[in-house]
Image (cartoon, rainbow, N blue to C red; front, side, top):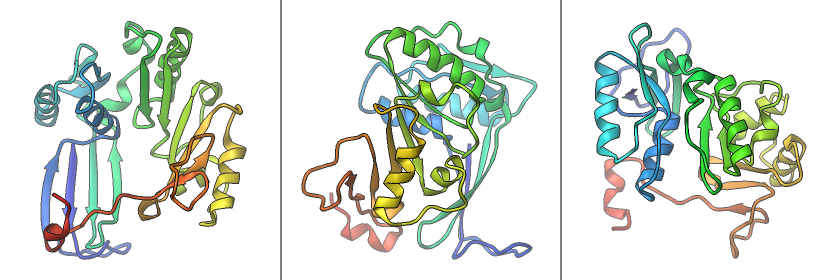
Length: 249
């Protein structure tokens, strides 16, 4: 569950700021991706674990309304539902603290009976245990399915996981963390070089998201006419009520 506070600016360490709005929103990186996929395709299955609490009940109801297949959605009474505490400033930039709760109780044994076939696409994030991702991705590769990983929140990969990934999707912070450096240059060539060095195989694609600057990467097709080799521009959206009249209908 995303607990979202809108504030004029992010607080500095030790500082309290007054917020303008508070929202409880169904969230989670994996859930968000599953919902987006389900709105485009009917056969989307969500594999996860919720706590037996108010947040868990609300999220389960939301996921059912989104037409997701929930045969592999599990529950635990020992751990609370995962929560993200999010502050969003007036520019639309956010900072996030994730308390994993039940998400981190999804074990390899919980995904052992997930049916996979050639042509399936398996998507995951680092809000669950890497051992669980590795177990499912290994089975996906054996079945001829494609795997997509967003390794966020950023963390060092466990041995054997990276080679099981067909497409990596990362932002600049995650790229720097996983590449073992403190920061990545904003220069497109430098970002592509980091992405190239990170790949475990020539046919592995790395897509780097740059916020308002769009995306660049290695090993994926660029959109014609962008003026940026190996990249695509961002889709512009408004960030506040004052922008709504300018948004395309």
